[in-house]
Length: 106
Image 1: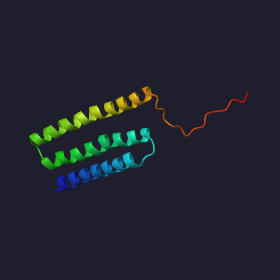
Image 2: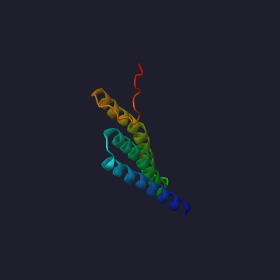
Image 3: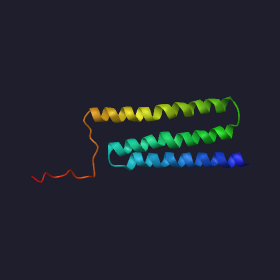
Image 4: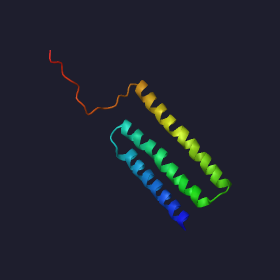
């Protein structure tokens, strides 16, 4: 009973992060904020979702495969996001800054 509640809470929380991240990818104004939203989906949303599925499946071979999938996502998600951001910077895409540059007083 407790494990069912815990697994459904994790699944629900993971679905919430995936939904918020998907809305962020659609609605946010620039590339850099969309990239952040996409990385949150993969990092937080999918790991929580798969963790809930691990608890739901019990101790079995499926749980081992799901844990391997979590490890794979945990290692490759930030690496892929960094590679995309680095490629964007190299191609000349600069992030917008809200801060104004200081004016020369001389």
